[in-house]
Amino acid sequence: MCLNAADDMNGTVRHDTSWRIGGLAKGSRISDRHRITDHGSRLLPDWLTPMTCDLCDNDGGVVLWRDERCRVVRVDEPGYPGYCRVIWNAHVKEMSDLPARERAHCLEVVFAVEATLRQLLSPDKINLASLGNMTPHLHWHVIPRLREDPHFPNAIWSRPLREPCSADAHPALATFGAALAAQLENTGQPPTS
Image (tube, rainbow, N blue to C red):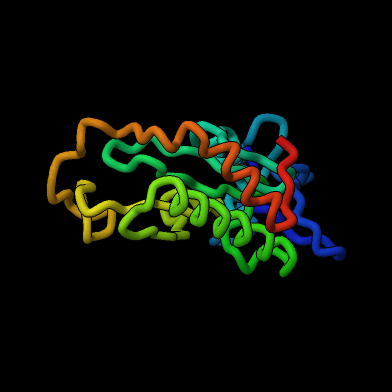
């Protein structure tokens, strides 16, 4: 479980799940908009209710590369060999929630994933997307697009135009982790995996 991260005075993103509301009973109201709910040993207003986050609780795919700030995972999506996500490790919702230096690091990793996929797969196009509507945890989709993929030229979240190709595995993807680490090393972002 996690609460939204907040910036402290130094600009460091932190998790804080230690909020306690003393002297209020379960079901009490602070106002018409806030109700106190029992969460185990803590009573919290609904707006402070701890939430579960799939990207906080799980890796979000097969980890290909990781450092102390983010990770790159392979997404198992039929018809999309090389589909990756760059996931920020701390729970933040938006890029603008990060200090400038952290935003730059995240984008360096996104661009390194894109460059590595272009080098290994020679796709027709790369799609980059940071949506987070279903999972409000900062992550970027890096999707190599091929003319024969199920949705091309439309977005992969649209209605498919064709069935996925049966041969999803691309031989070049076997070296993706090492190639990505080399790409990040060349940009001054060495992995700590």
